[in-house]
Amino acid sequence: MKCTNKALCITIAFLLTSVLTGCVGTGYQMPFDYKTKLSAFNFSSVNFEDTAKPFAYDLCIAPDENTTGGPELSSTAAAGLFDLNSRGTIYAKNVHKQMYPASLTKTMTALLALKYGHLEDTITASSGVLISEQGAQLVGLKEGDRLTLDQALHALLMYSGNDASVAIAEYISGSVDEFCDLMNKEARSIGATNTHFVNPHGLSDESHYTTAYDLYLIFNEAMKYDKFKEIIGTTEYSTTYSDRDGNPKEMNLKNSNLYLTGEKSYPDGVNIIGGKTGTTNMAGSCLILLLNDQKGNPYISVILKSDDRDRLYSDMNTLLEQVP
Image (cartoon, rainbow, N blue to C red):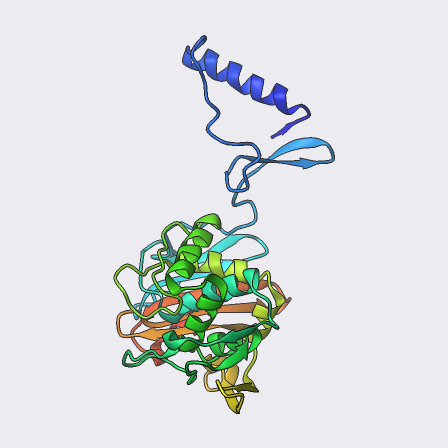
């Protein structure tokens, strides 16, 4: 829809509404602010013309189910495969079902760190990094440890360190609670409206949930940052940070993505760029990936709540075979 005069366009819309509804003389309030950044009917100025641009004009739109002719993936609760160039959904299984995301949560943590932080800034770990929950993945941060945001992001995305996620949250917002408020605000702003976060790492909580489709939206947003794509594709990383007394501490990380380490193979015709893994008892085994086809076209694939790690990679391979 194009209109060379914004005021005229709005006036015509008003008159048409009045005629069609018989509401001449009745007050009419525009439901959308033409300057808004979020509305599906926001206006943008292009070559001095006013053009209505839908909110999701550059996003994949997905039904909850789009499995016709595709695999069943019986070991997986939810899955999606999204073609970023054509903005098409190739495969969808329960993609709008609210589920536990495990450490795929850290994609949002990384997004906010890159959006509001500075890679060279020094983070000082508080006592909040001393997470005692059984099974929590930790890089071994102690109170008073000092490391850069860049180092913390490697620990977050490659090794899935829950202690690193707390350190990042407190650096960005001052507290975990404030950071979670920011996570939820950001989720809403990019359309991830079936999501609610209560922590920055993904340890299970009944109030902490998202969907396969919302994770696609969050991951897609994070991909706007080159550092994010760089880290999720890094296989090994070694660095030195300091303890509270200034003594050096070594950090040697290996990516938890078994495709990158070569422990799992993927189908011919695709190339895995990187991704994020996640596992808890309640969430099962989860994985989100950025990949290219043979021509270099990008895709995002996601699986939530696979029965175990072996079935996760087996089902992901089956999903990746759907890439044209």
